Amino acid sequence: MNTESHPYAGDGNHTASYYAASANPSPERPELIGDHQIDICIVGAGYSGLSTGLHLAEKGYKVAIIEGARVGWGASGRNGGQIVNGLNASLQTINKRYGKDTATFVASMVQEGGEIIRERIKTYNIKCDLKEKNIFTGLTRAHMRELEDRKKLWANYGINNQEMLDKNQLREYVKSDLYEGGLIDHSGGHMHPLNLALGEAAAFEQNGGIIYEMSPVIDVNHKAVSPVVKTAKGSITCKTLVLCGNAYLGHVVPTLTSRVMPVSTQVMATEPLGEALARELIPSDACVEDIRYILDYYRLSGDKRMLFGGGTVYGGADPVDIKAKLQRNMDKVFPQLKGVKIDYAWSGNFALSFSRVPQMGRIGDNTYFAHGYSGHGVTGSHTFGRILSEAIHGDLTRFDVFAKLPWHPFPGGRAFRVPYSVMGSWWYGLRDKLGA
Image 1: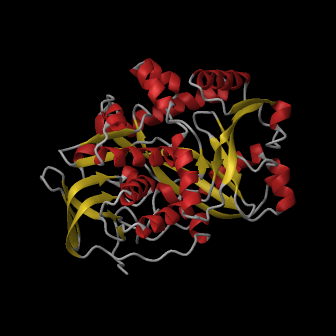
Image 2: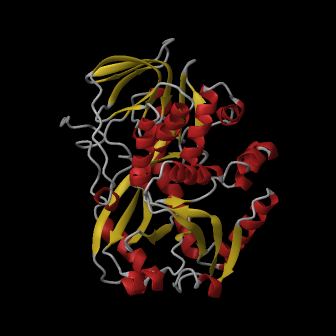
Image 3: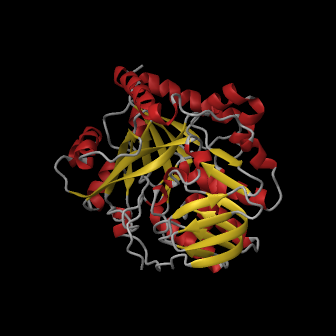
């Protein structure tokens, strides 16, 4: 096992999260040593890389994935575990910016990621505590109008899995007095995110794929006819390269650095609550998130812990005290949990794009990339992995739609993207507090 310090990953092992503590057994994959050649090389063993790799391996391609730490080390193994349909940018926003045809195209695939996840779980018998339904909650009447508009908008695109809940109806699903009501998406859900990633990695290997762990990429030559990826102890030359490092790709590929900004979000896990208290809090066992700009999201784990997340830190830094930060919010939602023991608290980064729309494209002739899910990567990454595999296999139909969407760097470049975003966050946070 390689024990060298990795600049972005500490020693490369999983962070001390509930997910890591309850992960299914998984082998330690070898480090990349020596020079190799293969059809397709993918950088990053998170959902994007694993989804792309598994689709391609199932088609018969010879594929290798290089991971700087462990499989699912980044956002894929740390997130809230919620299967939430849609992108960060709403269909209304996409229609306004890019036109009706693009909005219709996006609407046709907003549920696809969840469908892929369920198919993977079923086909490969992945044990990851899959549960159904997710709920969006509103704290104000303005929030409720926003949810009603969302339901109508999605229905206009033929998506009819959502149902409005007034205050009393919501309490049948979530026993909290904080909310005015909510919207339930019957096609949403939640699961153990790290175990999903580990299961997909095993499925990839069952189909002939190779994964190298603890192998941070130090150089990428995407301009060559046959792209080359270098690590400290080895290299891979390939016919096609796919970059799926997302928030953790760093500055290895400068062309992509300005496109996204790492943003950290935090999650904590209580001690096991027991069946009675867990059912008292969330009788439906659905996952929940509110619709504020800086939101709370939470759900019950398979062993009846409350997994509660929220908050953002632009630039990707960790808060000084995650438990204190999240405990205040959890106590507002569920006063019954005041004083409950917190067993785990952790932080992780997602990649934010300025437009809040994920980016997919190509640099050079044979290098593809996907990133910038902006907090909606659980489903988005699975969909984009399929679209990347389609493009590499020769069908560019869906890839080209995303590749042609305009993107914009954060105002002020790298130096000012964090303070700019903090100012925006402050403004929207103030609107949340005022109920605007």
